Image 1 (cartoon, one colour):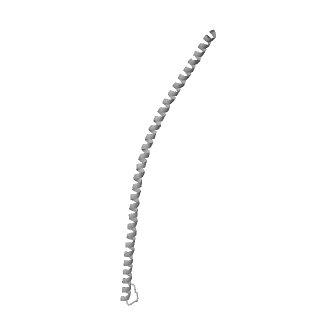
Image 2 (cartoon, rainbow, N blue to C red):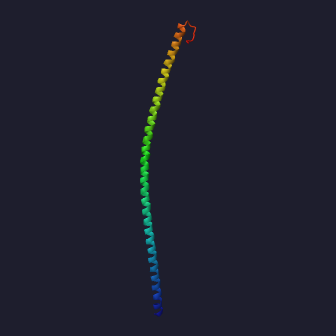
Image 3 (cartoon, helix red, strand yellow):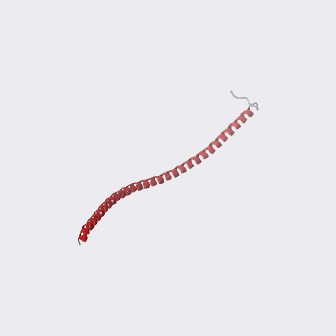
Length: 119
């Protein structure tokens, strides 16, 4: 019985030591879990900020796309107007040129075909 009695305290000591180690491990795990929870909260907050920024950028890109479409339409109209103006100017220049040639021919004819210059 003495042997059993001597073994009993050793066994209790081991159980107490295992409980102490388990308690310490649980405390460490709880602290780590708290740190993880804080880190996750920080990451979540940062993710929310980034999501807002992405949403704002998406809106800005959409607005820029609309502006580019409007600008392209504007320049298309400007180019069409320039082409129309060029054709109009060419036609007017052609009429002036023909008028001047006709005037020159009339002048030459009026001078007897000699083509003398006016002074």
